[in-house]
Length: 213
Image (cartoon, one colour):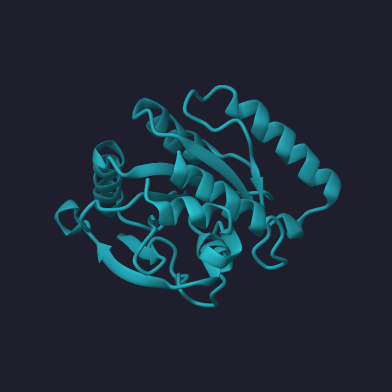
């Protein structure tokens, strides 16, 4: 690992408040950028708040753009963090959308499967779960896929400002219990609110810890 990455890990807020730029979108594997730096991917159901969380993470308002039509974005979007890049954030298409055609869903699965299984620089996947709903069956499917591919992933609860403290405690306990059944799951949760910026500093530290792993 480069000295720049090691130095950056001690200053997560400085890193994420520094240069962050959109690199490219990849609708197919042949369009992936060269694997020159570590990558951290973000995945989640449509409308889980992924774009808002990525924007809060990098201290921007509209770096990652949310779609008004769930399932519309079917590409891997790459963002360079640092100049030169220390690592990349990969914004994966939302999954579990009901309105997308079956063929579109199949293409997404092929793209994601191939990316996850064949990307040596992928350090960790952050799987976002809406705290109001908890882990759904479609989330379990993605987690099982990551288990099978032996890819480390960490669960991130989103929108925790939308529920009561007692409800949050319950969903945290339930999520932790379910995590124990998944071999590739990181044994800790990230609990966040993009709107209130709750847990963002801790998430930044978790991302940089993954980059360094």
